[in-house]
Each structure stands twice: as C-alpha cells, then as structure tokens.
Amino acid sequence: MNKTPKYEHSVPWFWPMAAAIEMQQEGLKVFQDNMRFIAEAGEIAAPPPPMWATENRVVKDLDTMRLRDFSAPQADPAAIPVLVDAPYAGHSSTIADFAKGQSLVETLLNSGLQRVLATDWKSATPEMRDYDIDKYLTDLNIAVDALGGRVALVGLCQGGWLSTMYACLYPQKVIALVLAGAPIDTDAGNGPIKKLAHELPLSFYEQMVAAGGGRMLGQYMLAGWKDMHPGKQYVGKFIDLYEHIEDKCYIARTEHFERWYENPIDLPGRYYLQAIQLLFKENRFAKGEFVALGKTLSLSQVVCPLYLLAGEADDITTREQVFAAKTLVGTPGDRIVSKLVPGGHIGLFMGTKTLRNTWPGVCQWIAANTSGQIPAAVAAAAR
Image (cartoon, rainbow, N blue to C red; front, side, top):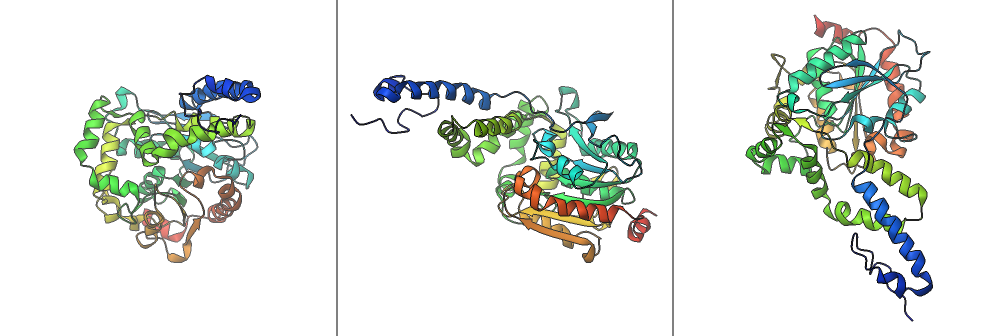
C-alpha cells in the first residue's frame, strides 16, 4: 500500500485525523507528531512575552522607558557608559539582549566594555498617546544625565535616528556614535519601507491611529510586517515547524523568537505620525529641516566618531539609508567607519555570525574612542 504523501495532511490547522490510520504502522507516530504540532503552533502564534537574557537592574524609570543597567558589580564607575538605544518601532527592546549567544548586550560585555545599559522603551498606554519625538529625546537626555552626562550611543534601527538627533542636540554628551540598520536618509535606496511611506497617503496611517484610540497598535504593525513576507509568515513557518517537530533545539529557538515577534508593543499616535510624515515622507532630518526641542537640526552638528553598520540583505533599512550619513555629518571622514555585513535587518542585532564576527570589532572601536578626552571638534561644537 502506498503511503500518504508527506504534506497531504499537514496544512496548518486542517489535518484529517484519518491520516494516522492511512499510514498504518506509522499512523500513531504521525498522530502524535500532529498533536505536538498543534500545541507548538499555539505556542508560536500566541506566546508569552519576551524576557531579557542578561541579568540587569532598572536604574531609572521614566515616562517612556526603563533604563536598564547590565554592568557587572565590579565595573569601573569612571568608564564611559555605552548606552544601547533599542528600536522603538513596534517590538520589545529585548532584541538587544535576545538570548544567550544571541545578545548584543552580552557581546558588548564580553568584549571588555564595562558599563553597558539599554533603553527599555515602554508600550504606549492610552495616556501616552500624545507623546511626541521631543518627549523621547527629553527622556533620553534625562537618562544620559543620570549616567554622568557623557555616553557612547549605539542606535539600533529606529533608535538610530533618535540617537543621531540627540547627538545633534548635545554633541558634548555623545563621545562616540554607532548606527546599525538606522534610517538616516529615508529617500536613499529603494526598499519596501520607502515605497510604503511614499505610496500610502498619510490619511491611511491617521486612520489606523484613530482606530487605536490615538495609538498605533502593535497588532496593526505586526500584520503589516507579516504582509511583507506573507508566504513565510502565514504558512511557511508552520510547515517548517512541522518538519522539525522532533528537533527540540529548533522548537526552542522558534518559540524564543516568536515570544519577541508575536508580542508587539503600541506606539503613541503622535510620535508615530511624526515619524511617518516628517522623517519617512518628507525626509526632513536628512534635509536639515527637522525641528526638535525648539532647534532646527543639521546632521553637520554630529561631530563625534561614527560607526555605520548595514546588512547586505536588509529590506527594512537599506544600506543606502545608513551609509548616506557619511556625506551629511560633520564628523571628519577619517573618523567614520562603514561596514556592510551579510544578512538582513534583525541579524544586525542578534545574528550569531554578526555578533561573533563583527561586533567585537565595533566594541574595540568604541573602547578606542571613549578612552580619551572630549575631541576638540566636539568641544568646539558645544561652545
């Protein structure tokens, strides 16, 4: 008797239980696998919230964030703090400390940087719906001042443009700046985010914010991200799960990632619409027209050492959007490092190869640029 083809009864949520009988001696095993699959599919579709992988303590609890300190108790208090400005784009800041062996925070610490902290951005409550970009810059400044007023900033994705704005406003406080997958010139390149920003009218985003009661709900953004790769997100990952149902390591990795991916956070509507209109539609920051905290920002105000990191296959923030910063900032060319690495967007922050092969070099660069005094260009800009 011919056996049933491998996937005939494995379309997610729709297996006839008769498949177990059709496959005779293999029937019980297939039935058990299907039952495990149903349980695991439920776990990755509605998982518990993500957790921080590295021990830490909250040293400042602000309206928009919790400032988390990962430094060892024996860390030199005189060392320049390295502040990871995590993405605030609809997912938890835990992407900066995803898992043991896949943690940027862990890599920074293991590479010899003593004081490592991260912004843990809060999901927007209804009371936060009117928070704007100025509010997030203000709280970032409070966090920096709490750390002594001088930091090395590591801006990831959307945390990158916020960190760069901060470096424009307070050049004397930013000793070095790392931008990983950060959209600085949003008109550069031809990525899908640029296309969506320009093709969809602002009213589309305003309607979503209105539907969320003045917030951009994470569930709306999650649906949008999934629709960028619908085959993988709605079918492919479940087929992959079924193929690997007996692989405990694969199951554990999948569950861990889905805890982060399937638990989006909400954003204040005002902040979100400002970012869409002023940054992604009108590109005001790159054009020197963005006003923050009452000041018109120019990227030429960024004069600290700068490290730019982009992914070859990044379809969220294209390399052009990151590397455009080289020609816009005031930092001398010989103090700018640009590096293109294999992989996509999220891999820049938690990919094992990038963490192993690239970030230790970034850490050395941070250490080299935070060991001395404030550079003359920064001191001049501050006056």
